[in-house]
Image 1: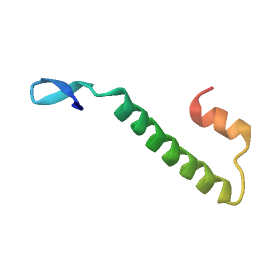
Image 2: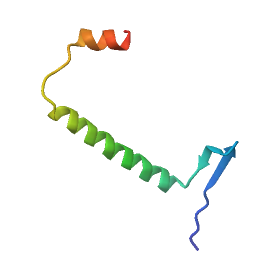
Image 3: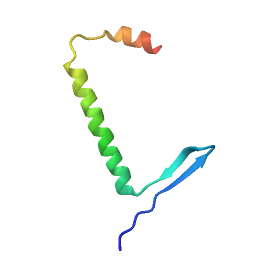
Length: 61
């Protein structure tokens, strides 16, 4: 017998906790990884660069 249980907790109409099967959570992670890789590849295709000093200044480092 196969069954899946998902549980969510809400407060004032907003979901703040969700329990899902491990396989679903792993699938979500795979999807996120795929999206991240697509963003990385897109950034690599951009021309030019930003000096490290400028990045530090913008991030307040």
